[in-house]
Length: 238
Image (cartoon, rainbow, N blue to C red; front, side, top):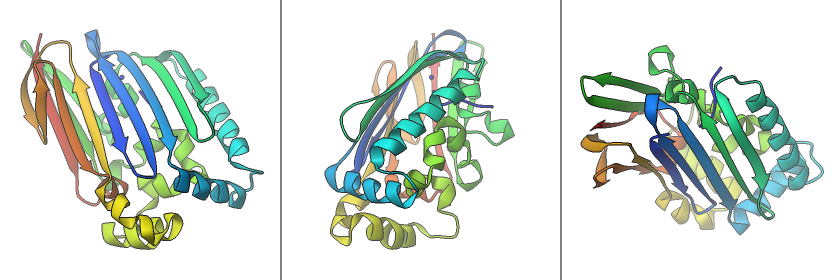
């Protein structure tokens, strides 16, 4: 089993017109860490989720959120690699969560076995690489069980198979959120900022922000339809 979280500050931020989700992963010694997330749907996305929740058999979005959070807490409680954690609602369409994990490869899945993360040390240098493509998309369902729910399935990359990025954007997202919101959807980016406990020496697929932090970004629609591999790498020394 894998979990959803990280002690290198690995911070994933999804800047989406339909929602804003900020994830912060701090990577510490022995690649353990703390993961935090806060998200909030924008008004038109909240309206759409309300309808999707009802179509999914819930009385309203409140019932959907409550059940999704309950299931996620139960899943985290079964994990031995997750220690302290919490998930709670913030407003009508907002939520926040945090958890402490023991190993980033356990959290994101080992890339050698179809997961997302690979991390190792070569002398004094630490190297973290993240790979995300169609075959690895299902790993997110282990990290975020909520996206397996019908109401969130359109934001699940594992559900977009068979579509091109343009088809998924116009036919699925455009239909769900409205064609008038397509320009905003196309501008949406997924941003991942990582802070490590040392000095960054190499970055691939992103940019260095400071001595110990880097930033990666990719269009959110490409993340939802990962036909082409997304590859990010950062290395640092203590």
